[in-house]
Length: 392
Image 1 (tube, rainbow, N blue to C red):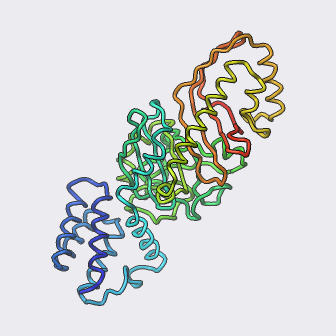
Image 2: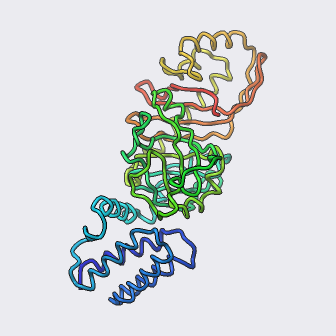
Image 3: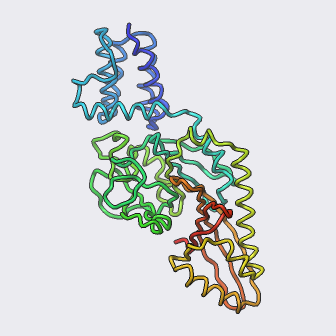
Protein backbone atom coordinates (compact mmCIF):
# COMPACT_ATOMS: atom_id res chain seq x y z
CA UNK A 1 0.00 0.00 0.00
CA UNK A 2 2.21 2.92 1.29
CA UNK A 3 5.44 3.18 3.22
CA UNK A 4 3.71 5.16 5.96
CA UNK A 5 2.04 2.03 7.40
CA UNK A 6 5.02 1.24 9.61
CA UNK A 7 5.23 4.89 10.63
CA UNK A 8 1.59 4.97 11.67
CA UNK A 9 1.96 1.82 13.78
CA UNK A 10 4.95 3.28 15.61
CA UNK A 11 3.17 6.59 16.06
CA UNK A 12 0.08 5.02 17.52
CA UNK A 13 2.05 2.62 19.69
CA UNK A 14 3.92 5.54 21.18
CA UNK A 15 0.73 7.42 21.89
CA UNK A 16 -0.76 4.29 23.45
CA UNK A 17 2.12 4.10 25.90
CA UNK A 18 2.37 7.80 26.74
CA UNK A 19 -1.12 9.33 26.78
CA UNK A 20 -1.55 8.71 30.56
CA UNK A 21 -5.32 8.85 30.36
CA UNK A 22 -7.82 6.53 31.93
CA UNK A 23 -8.13 2.97 30.87
CA UNK A 24 -11.58 3.39 29.41
CA UNK A 25 -10.74 5.98 26.75
CA UNK A 26 -7.75 6.72 24.47
CA UNK A 27 -5.58 3.67 25.19
CA UNK A 28 -8.24 1.15 24.24
CA UNK A 29 -9.10 3.03 21.07
CA UNK A 30 -5.45 3.38 20.09
CA UNK A 31 -4.87 -0.31 20.65
CA UNK A 32 -7.78 -1.10 18.35
CA UNK A 33 -6.42 1.33 15.73
CA UNK A 34 -3.03 -0.39 15.83
CA UNK A 35 -4.69 -3.76 15.34
CA UNK A 36 -6.74 -2.52 12.37
CA UNK A 37 -3.70 -0.91 10.70
CA UNK A 38 -1.66 -4.08 11.19
CA UNK A 39 -4.51 -5.91 9.43
CA UNK A 40 -4.41 -3.26 6.64
CA UNK A 41 -8.04 -2.46 7.49
CA UNK A 42 -7.94 1.30 6.95
CA UNK A 43 -11.72 1.82 7.04
CA UNK A 44 -12.10 0.37 10.53
CA UNK A 45 -8.95 2.19 11.68
CA UNK A 46 -10.58 5.45 10.59
CA UNK A 47 -13.72 4.54 12.54
CA UNK A 48 -11.64 4.06 15.68
CA UNK A 49 -9.77 7.33 15.08
CA UNK A 50 -13.17 9.02 14.92
CA UNK A 51 -13.97 7.49 18.30
CA UNK A 52 -10.64 8.80 19.63
CA UNK A 53 -11.43 12.29 18.34
CA UNK A 54 -14.82 12.07 20.01
CA UNK A 55 -13.19 11.05 23.29
CA UNK A 56 -10.39 13.66 23.02
CA UNK A 57 -11.74 16.36 20.67
CA UNK A 58 -8.85 18.72 21.39
CA UNK A 59 -6.11 16.18 20.55
CA UNK A 60 -4.97 17.65 17.24
CA UNK A 61 -2.54 14.85 16.35
CA UNK A 62 -5.53 12.49 16.13
CA UNK A 63 -6.87 14.62 13.28
CA UNK A 64 -3.51 14.39 11.50
CA UNK A 65 -3.57 10.59 11.85
CA UNK A 66 -7.07 10.56 10.40
CA UNK A 67 -5.89 12.73 7.52
CA UNK A 68 -3.03 10.33 6.81
CA UNK A 69 -5.38 7.36 6.89
CA UNK A 70 -7.73 9.05 4.43
CA UNK A 71 -4.78 9.80 2.16
CA UNK A 72 -3.67 6.17 2.55
CA UNK A 73 -7.06 5.04 1.24
CA UNK A 74 -6.31 6.95 -1.95
CA UNK A 75 -2.75 5.52 -2.09
CA UNK A 76 -1.22 8.96 -2.40
CA UNK A 77 0.16 9.73 1.04
CA UNK A 78 3.69 11.04 0.51
CA UNK A 79 4.47 12.59 3.87
CA UNK A 80 3.05 13.12 7.35
CA UNK A 81 0.32 15.75 7.39
CA UNK A 82 -1.15 17.44 4.35
CA UNK A 83 -0.22 21.12 4.07
CA UNK A 84 -3.83 21.77 3.09
CA UNK A 85 -5.18 20.20 6.27
CA UNK A 86 -4.49 23.24 8.48
CA UNK A 87 -2.23 26.27 8.21
CA UNK A 88 1.43 25.50 7.62
CA UNK A 89 2.70 26.94 10.92
CA UNK A 90 0.34 24.75 12.92
CA UNK A 91 1.13 21.64 10.91
CA UNK A 92 4.84 22.26 11.47
CA UNK A 93 4.22 22.59 15.21
CA UNK A 94 2.29 19.30 15.21
CA UNK A 95 5.03 17.56 13.24
CA UNK A 96 7.60 18.80 15.77
CA UNK A 97 5.42 17.67 18.68
CA UNK A 98 5.04 14.20 17.21
CA UNK A 99 8.79 13.97 16.56
CA UNK A 100 9.47 14.95 20.18
CA UNK A 101 7.04 12.32 21.40
CA UNK A 102 8.47 9.60 19.17
CA UNK A 103 12.13 10.15 19.97
CA UNK A 104 11.82 9.20 23.66
CA UNK A 105 13.47 5.91 24.59
CA UNK A 106 11.14 3.97 26.98
CA UNK A 107 14.19 3.14 29.15
CA UNK A 108 15.50 6.74 29.15
CA UNK A 109 14.73 7.20 32.83
CA UNK A 110 17.41 4.67 33.79
CA UNK A 111 20.27 7.03 32.91
CA UNK A 112 18.77 9.76 35.14
CA UNK A 113 18.42 7.30 38.01
CA UNK A 114 22.06 6.30 37.59
CA UNK A 115 23.21 9.92 37.50
CA UNK A 116 21.22 11.37 40.39
CA UNK A 117 20.44 8.58 42.85
CA UNK A 118 23.45 9.13 45.09
CA UNK A 119 22.73 12.85 45.44
CA UNK A 120 19.31 12.69 47.09
CA UNK A 121 18.67 12.57 50.83
CA UNK A 122 15.83 10.80 52.62
CA UNK A 123 14.13 14.14 53.30
CA UNK A 124 13.45 14.59 49.55
CA UNK A 125 10.53 12.28 48.62
CA UNK A 126 10.50 13.07 44.86
CA UNK A 127 12.66 14.54 42.13
CA UNK A 128 11.50 16.07 38.84
CA UNK A 129 13.89 16.12 35.88
CA UNK A 130 12.98 18.25 32.86
CA UNK A 131 14.84 17.41 29.63
CA UNK A 132 14.23 20.58 27.59
CA UNK A 133 15.87 19.20 24.45
CA UNK A 134 13.48 16.26 24.27
CA UNK A 135 10.41 18.08 25.66
CA UNK A 136 10.07 15.58 28.48
CA UNK A 137 9.39 15.70 32.21
CA UNK A 138 10.41 12.71 34.34
CA UNK A 139 9.12 12.08 37.86
CA UNK A 140 11.07 9.91 40.31
CA UNK A 141 10.27 8.69 43.80
CA UNK A 142 13.12 8.62 46.29
CA UNK A 143 13.35 5.17 47.80
CA UNK A 144 16.11 4.92 50.44
CA UNK A 145 18.44 7.31 48.55
CA UNK A 146 17.74 5.53 45.27
CA UNK A 147 15.53 7.02 42.59
CA UNK A 148 12.67 4.89 41.31
CA UNK A 149 10.98 5.91 38.07
CA UNK A 150 7.34 6.95 38.51
CA UNK A 151 6.23 8.42 35.16
CA UNK A 152 7.19 10.72 32.29
CA UNK A 153 5.28 13.25 30.22
CA UNK A 154 5.51 15.34 27.09
CA UNK A 155 5.92 19.06 27.92
CA UNK A 156 6.09 22.44 26.22
CA UNK A 157 8.70 25.11 27.07
CA UNK A 158 9.38 28.74 26.12
CA UNK A 159 8.70 30.06 22.62
CA UNK A 160 12.37 31.00 22.28
CA UNK A 161 13.75 27.80 23.80
CA UNK A 162 15.78 27.58 27.00
CA UNK A 163 18.52 29.45 28.87
CA UNK A 164 16.51 32.33 30.38
CA UNK A 165 18.56 35.44 31.15
CA UNK A 166 16.22 38.41 31.06
CA UNK A 167 12.60 39.27 31.78
CA UNK A 168 10.40 38.84 28.74
CA UNK A 169 12.87 36.74 26.70
CA UNK A 170 10.26 33.93 26.55
CA UNK A 171 12.85 31.31 27.45
CA UNK A 172 12.70 28.55 30.05
CA UNK A 173 15.48 28.78 32.67
CA UNK A 174 18.10 26.09 33.20
CA UNK A 175 19.12 25.17 36.72
CA UNK A 176 18.16 23.55 40.01
CA UNK A 177 14.83 24.87 41.26
CA UNK A 178 12.33 23.97 43.95
CA UNK A 179 8.54 23.96 44.03
CA UNK A 180 6.91 26.71 46.09
CA UNK A 181 3.33 25.46 45.97
CA UNK A 182 0.17 26.07 43.97
CA UNK A 183 -0.74 29.54 42.70
CA UNK A 184 -3.70 30.42 44.90
CA UNK A 185 -5.68 32.73 42.66
CA UNK A 186 -8.06 32.61 39.71
CA UNK A 187 -5.93 32.23 36.59
CA UNK A 188 -6.78 32.69 32.91
CA UNK A 189 -7.77 29.54 31.01
CA UNK A 190 -4.39 29.47 29.20
CA UNK A 191 -2.81 28.08 32.38
CA UNK A 192 -5.12 25.06 32.40
CA UNK A 193 -6.30 23.27 35.50
CA UNK A 194 -3.61 24.62 37.85
CA UNK A 195 -0.22 26.32 38.12
CA UNK A 196 2.65 25.59 40.50
CA UNK A 197 5.42 28.10 41.16
CA UNK A 198 9.19 27.50 40.96
CA UNK A 199 11.74 29.57 42.91
CA UNK A 200 13.04 31.42 39.86
CA UNK A 201 15.19 33.49 40.15
CA UNK A 202 17.20 31.28 42.50
CA UNK A 203 20.50 32.26 44.15
CA UNK A 204 22.53 31.40 41.06
CA UNK A 205 20.23 33.50 38.87
CA UNK A 206 20.46 36.44 41.25
CA UNK A 207 24.27 36.23 41.39
CA UNK A 208 24.35 36.36 37.59
CA UNK A 209 21.71 39.12 37.40
CA UNK A 210 19.15 36.97 35.56
CA UNK A 211 15.87 38.85 35.61
CA UNK A 212 12.22 37.92 35.35
CA UNK A 213 9.79 36.03 37.57
CA UNK A 214 6.72 33.80 37.47
CA UNK A 215 8.19 30.56 36.10
CA UNK A 216 5.51 27.91 36.69
CA UNK A 217 4.59 24.35 35.88
CA UNK A 218 1.04 24.58 34.59
CA UNK A 219 -1.61 23.02 32.36
CA UNK A 220 -2.98 23.95 28.95
CA UNK A 221 -6.18 25.71 27.80
CA UNK A 222 -9.36 23.72 28.26
CA UNK A 223 -9.90 23.41 24.49
CA UNK A 224 -6.38 22.03 23.93
CA UNK A 225 -5.02 18.53 24.52
CA UNK A 226 -1.36 19.62 24.36
CA UNK A 227 0.71 22.55 23.09
CA UNK A 228 3.58 22.79 20.62
CA UNK A 229 7.05 22.05 22.08
CA UNK A 230 8.01 25.75 22.00
CA UNK A 231 4.90 27.71 22.91
CA UNK A 232 4.96 29.09 26.47
CA UNK A 233 6.32 32.39 27.80
CA UNK A 234 9.01 30.46 29.69
CA UNK A 235 6.94 28.14 31.86
CA UNK A 236 6.68 24.35 31.60
CA UNK A 237 3.27 23.27 30.31
CA UNK A 238 1.73 19.77 30.51
CA UNK A 239 -1.56 18.34 29.28
CA UNK A 240 -4.14 18.87 32.01
CA UNK A 241 -4.57 15.12 32.52
CA UNK A 242 -0.82 14.73 33.01
CA UNK A 243 -0.68 17.73 35.35
CA UNK A 244 -3.45 16.23 37.48
CA UNK A 245 -1.70 12.84 37.51
CA UNK A 246 1.28 14.41 39.32
CA UNK A 247 -0.57 17.12 41.23
CA UNK A 248 0.10 15.19 44.45
CA UNK A 249 3.81 15.99 43.96
CA UNK A 250 3.53 19.46 42.42
CA UNK A 251 1.53 20.78 45.37
CA UNK A 252 4.35 19.85 47.77
CA UNK A 253 6.92 22.53 48.61
CA UNK A 254 10.71 22.22 48.21
CA UNK A 255 10.57 19.33 45.73
CA UNK A 256 13.66 19.69 43.47
CA UNK A 257 13.03 20.39 39.78
CA UNK A 258 16.14 20.03 37.62
CA UNK A 259 15.65 21.85 34.31
CA UNK A 260 18.47 20.61 32.14
CA UNK A 261 19.90 21.01 28.65
CA UNK A 262 21.72 17.72 29.17
CA UNK A 263 19.70 15.41 26.98
CA UNK A 264 19.34 11.78 27.94
CA UNK A 265 21.88 10.93 25.24
CA UNK A 266 24.32 13.37 26.87
CA UNK A 267 23.86 11.65 30.21
CA UNK A 268 24.20 8.21 28.64
CA UNK A 269 27.54 9.23 27.11
CA UNK A 270 29.04 10.03 30.52
CA UNK A 271 32.12 8.16 31.64
CA UNK A 272 30.73 6.75 34.89
CA UNK A 273 34.14 5.77 36.24
CA UNK A 274 35.17 9.42 36.03
CA UNK A 275 31.78 10.47 37.40
CA UNK A 276 32.16 8.21 40.45
CA UNK A 277 35.66 9.54 41.06
CA UNK A 278 34.42 13.13 40.82
CA UNK A 279 31.67 12.30 43.30
CA UNK A 280 34.22 10.88 45.74
CA UNK A 281 36.55 13.88 45.43
CA UNK A 282 33.72 16.36 45.95
CA UNK A 283 32.32 14.48 48.97
CA UNK A 284 35.77 14.50 50.56
CA UNK A 285 36.05 18.23 49.89
CA UNK A 286 32.67 18.95 51.44
CA UNK A 287 33.60 16.91 54.53
CA UNK A 288 36.90 18.80 54.71
CA UNK A 289 35.00 22.10 54.73
CA UNK A 290 32.75 21.03 57.62
CA UNK A 291 35.68 19.58 59.59
CA UNK A 292 37.75 22.77 59.26
CA UNK A 293 34.81 24.65 60.75
CA UNK A 294 34.45 22.19 63.63
CA UNK A 295 38.16 22.47 64.42
CA UNK A 296 37.97 26.31 64.38
CA UNK A 297 40.77 26.48 61.79
CA UNK A 298 39.98 29.78 60.11
CA UNK A 299 42.62 29.69 57.35
CA UNK A 300 41.76 26.12 56.35
CA UNK A 301 38.07 27.00 56.47
CA UNK A 302 38.63 30.10 54.30
CA UNK A 303 40.59 28.07 51.73
CA UNK A 304 37.35 26.34 50.75
CA UNK A 305 35.93 29.62 49.40
CA UNK A 306 36.73 31.43 46.17
CA UNK A 307 37.92 35.05 46.38
CA UNK A 308 34.68 36.28 44.81
CA UNK A 309 32.32 34.26 47.02
CA UNK A 310 29.37 35.76 48.87
CA UNK A 311 27.40 34.80 51.97
CA UNK A 312 23.73 35.73 51.57
CA UNK A 313 24.96 38.22 48.95
CA UNK A 314 27.34 40.02 51.35
CA UNK A 315 30.62 41.12 49.77
CA UNK A 316 33.57 38.76 50.28
CA UNK A 317 35.78 41.16 52.32
CA UNK A 318 32.87 42.16 54.56
CA UNK A 319 31.98 38.51 55.21
CA UNK A 320 35.63 37.46 55.84
CA UNK A 321 36.10 40.25 58.38
CA UNK A 322 32.95 39.18 60.24
CA UNK A 323 33.82 35.47 60.10
CA UNK A 324 37.38 36.02 61.34
CA UNK A 325 36.05 37.92 64.35
CA UNK A 326 33.61 35.07 65.11
CA UNK A 327 36.37 32.44 64.90
CA UNK A 328 38.66 34.45 67.21
CA UNK A 329 35.94 34.60 69.87
CA UNK A 330 34.81 30.98 69.60
CA UNK A 331 35.97 28.44 72.19
CA UNK A 332 34.20 25.36 70.84
CA UNK A 333 31.97 24.29 67.94
CA UNK A 334 29.51 21.41 67.68
CA UNK A 335 28.40 21.08 64.08
CA UNK A 336 26.01 18.52 62.64
CA UNK A 337 25.17 18.19 58.92
CA UNK A 338 22.09 16.20 57.89
CA UNK A 339 19.74 15.76 54.92
CA UNK A 340 22.50 16.54 52.45
CA UNK A 341 21.54 16.75 48.77
CA UNK A 342 23.98 17.48 45.94
CA UNK A 343 22.83 18.44 42.44
CA UNK A 344 24.87 18.78 39.29
CA UNK A 345 23.94 22.30 38.11
CA UNK A 346 22.94 22.22 34.42
CA UNK A 347 23.38 24.77 31.69
CA UNK A 348 26.91 25.93 32.52
CA UNK A 349 30.26 25.34 30.83
CA UNK A 350 32.07 25.18 34.17
CA UNK A 351 31.34 22.35 36.58
CA UNK A 352 29.00 23.53 39.35
CA UNK A 353 27.29 21.73 42.21
CA UNK A 354 24.28 22.99 44.15
CA UNK A 355 24.31 21.68 47.73
CA UNK A 356 21.44 21.79 50.22
CA UNK A 357 21.56 20.54 53.81
CA UNK A 358 20.30 21.03 57.34
CA UNK A 359 22.87 22.50 59.71
CA UNK A 360 22.75 22.34 63.50
CA UNK A 361 25.40 24.61 65.04
CA UNK A 362 26.35 25.24 68.64
CA UNK A 363 29.22 27.28 70.13
CA UNK A 364 29.84 29.43 73.18
CA UNK A 365 28.39 32.33 71.14
CA UNK A 366 25.26 30.96 69.50
CA UNK A 367 23.07 27.93 68.91
CA UNK A 368 20.97 27.50 65.75
CA UNK A 369 19.42 25.07 63.27
CA UNK A 370 18.79 26.10 59.67
CA UNK A 371 18.50 24.93 56.10
CA UNK A 372 21.51 26.06 54.08
CA UNK A 373 22.55 26.11 50.45
CA UNK A 374 25.92 26.32 48.76
CA UNK A 375 27.16 26.66 45.20
CA UNK A 376 30.53 25.04 44.48
CA UNK A 377 32.56 25.30 41.29
CA UNK A 378 35.50 23.28 40.05
CA UNK A 379 38.54 25.52 39.57
CA UNK A 380 42.23 24.98 38.82
CA UNK A 381 42.72 24.88 42.59
CA UNK A 382 39.98 22.30 43.11
CA UNK A 383 36.40 22.71 44.34
CA UNK A 384 35.57 26.13 45.82
CA UNK A 385 32.41 27.62 47.36
CA UNK A 386 31.26 30.77 45.56
CA UNK A 387 27.90 31.20 47.31
CA UNK A 388 26.55 30.22 50.71
CA UNK A 389 23.42 31.22 52.54
CA UNK A 390 20.10 30.23 54.04
CA UNK A 391 17.75 28.10 51.98
CA UNK A 392 14.24 29.57 52.11
